[in-house]
Length: 141
Image (cartoon, rainbow, N blue to C red; front, side):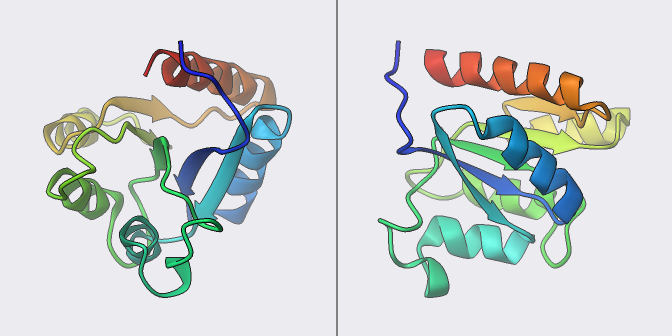
């Protein structure tokens, strides 16, 4: 089992500030450090260590990526396809976290290399349950 510390980074790619805040709040009492970007272009820059994200002490590589599909700029699908083409990121766990439960979206996400597809919970308690599931996933990764 992996040892968890605040140095265990999760990268959240989410354009809705309210949803990002809820996810941050649900992770506040965990051993994870959440990094948040608001669009697909910023996600790729973060993962590439480019521009504002060049400082790896401040912006460490994540052990898990939480990825919304509907984003400004590059979509979550574009980010996912980019990740799976990059040396060193082939095994980065990617959890698609979206508001849509459409069969075509699910199939497309898995075809592009998503590890999990989760629909964003509406209630905070359900969000905390989802975070517990993610913690178990990370512990086993």
